[in-house]
Amino acid sequence: MHVVRALQTGGVENVVRRLVSGLDPNRFQQTVCTLIPTSDACPVGTICLNRAADRAAFLVPQLRRIFAQQQPDIVHSRNWAAIEAIPAAKIAGVPVVIHSEHGRDIETMNRQPRRRRMLRRLSHRWTDRMFCVSQELRDYYCREIWLPAGALDVIPNGVDAEEYRPNLQARMDVRVKLLARPETLVLGTVSRLDPVKDHITLLEAASKGLQAGLDLQVVIIGDGSHRGVIEAFLAARPLLRQKTLLTGEVHDVSQWLNGLDVFVLPSLSEGFSNTLLEAMAVGVPPVATKIGGNTEIIEHGRSGLLVTPRDVEGIVNCFVHLANAQEWRLELGRNARERIVSHFSLERMLQRYDRMYSELMERSRVARSHKRNLAPID
Image (cartoon, rainbow, N blue to C red; front, side):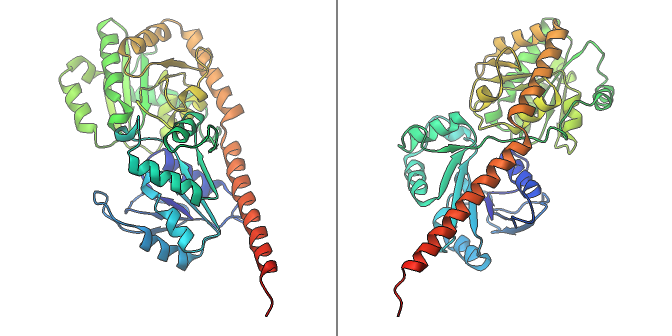
């Protein structure tokens, strides 16, 4: 049973969907437990606690009842929102308990509140496995919860390189929809509209590029709480507004990615960005901030470019170089796809999760068998 806050659009939710769709159904029967209601579909059964999204609640009793009723062999919780699943699973006698961290929010980007640090340290003791999706995130949490360096495992995200692949027809269709000329440099990003994703820096860089005479067009794919701020920023800059499209949520992300010349990820914090993996798999060269797993995915100067967070001038310089060097831009895109296929494929990710779940279940079975053998005979 996977436990997550919700099944909405986002990186951790995409990982869960890829697991429930990709793991062998003859070996794994999977269920998803969400804390708050969600309208997004899931390919397996779901259980919802129906908690209010904006109200704190003590979830351990309710989660314990669900685990006792469903009797899963494994409970796998993700991120702070679902951390109460750990004590609930232990109380309910779940054989294997796993917790993973997939990123940080903007409020706790640099340091975790003391209460969170204490609970995460206790969680490490209560779980059979605790891991992160990037080395940077692992090192961060080892420091924050006072663990030895490398004490947590790392399982990177992966992407289906067949679903996300170069598609010339999709590229042509998107650029016709955008009314983009062949020489126009189409910049884009895919993410929820949230302050931590820092869309404003991307827009400031695009605005400077337009003022410098670059032929640019910007596509922002996704939706979220920060949309009003972005729209207000655009409203004050008529030229940029004319050159920017806010698509909202889309279901054909791979099609839109194919229409881009450059994928931009200006985030202030990232765990291991699924959208970065997807863009690179499509063959779009990325410009991303030097944070989180971005530095583990991109080989700077070979499969993409890395910049300092909030470095508007640095991003503008990337746009200038990429606009004036089409062959180099195409080479970066080819190398980006090669990087994903060889290191961050969906198959590799599924193999790692399969191995982890199987090993922990076998270890649990052996321990329970040994315990029964040691029990006194009446």
